[in-house]
Image 1 (spheres, rainbow, N blue to C red):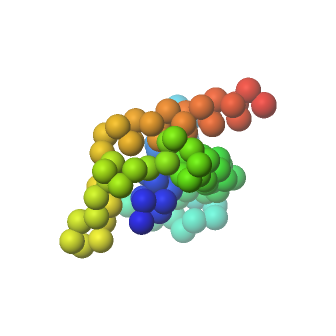
Image 2 (cartoon, rainbow, N blue to C red):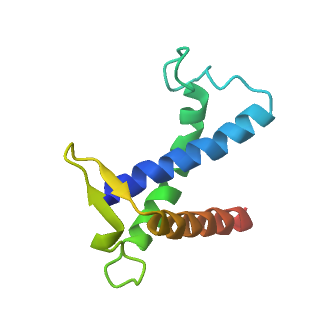
Length: 110
């Protein structure tokens, strides 16, 4: 459904942000502590994502509140025959803006 699609999209964006920091610090993203290390999986990135997952989940919750004007409208996404959800670019843009605001608010608290 659309909620799971937004969660997956948000986790992917979060992984990209964390990957930038990991690489910027010169760390090996493929060597993890919690997740199993192997050559095709950036285990360290997924180790570091865990404490930040609630930020993505909170953003999706707020974004999908039914009384919100932001709530994804049926015309903004479609289900393919195989069950995957395809989101319209306007929906993705609104979601990314909300996610960025959540990340920025959390950074200010630090």
